[in-house]
Length: 287
Image (tube, rainbow, N blue to C red; front, side, top):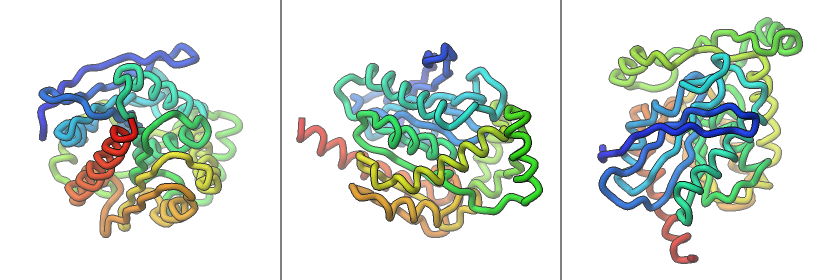
């Protein structure tokens, strides 16, 4: 792993809340491009140090905010009023990233829940980014929740929208990596909560985004493991097939949900770096 410089930044959002963001940058080389990274449900931006180190070796810096209700950012754990609020936060974080790395290519990267938010941001706000990366995005779950839990959630979403329930996801469904399991066990910032309001907002926004994929205006790298039981591989493939512009869809055979932590992480990272490098080179030539 390449040496990285790590610091933290507070990003002021439009409603006054400050997102805690982890800023990774190459320690011993010039920055070639920057990535605004949106984490998944229950985690935080500080959990991407290994991936950031690999990307730093190619000259990429990362600004990874803890989304509302996550990490060191204020708010009830697992709750945000809607995906639209998170998408607006993402658009503002992109602006911060562009200000820090003025004139350099900036990419938006979203994993799982962050993939839903990133895609919503790209479709609704159309930020001036060089490209979009979706890693196992939550466009649809990879399983059907029990009907009684869905019905209960619908009632709670109306009456107690901020009430949270356990996701009941275990590390074994996310990746195959004993070292990461140990790290996650010791990580006090992780949680397994989600509010009814956020769950149904994510569900509806996933459906909407799939139907609007033809409107996507930036190059897309879309990766999903075929053995993912958390988010739907089929929904990812459908979304990619609807794109009219540049789209590289990568099905990692046998890959689990967190491809950057799973046994497929070397292949995942090499595909990501190759795609980023190509777009940076094209951008530099055009400039």
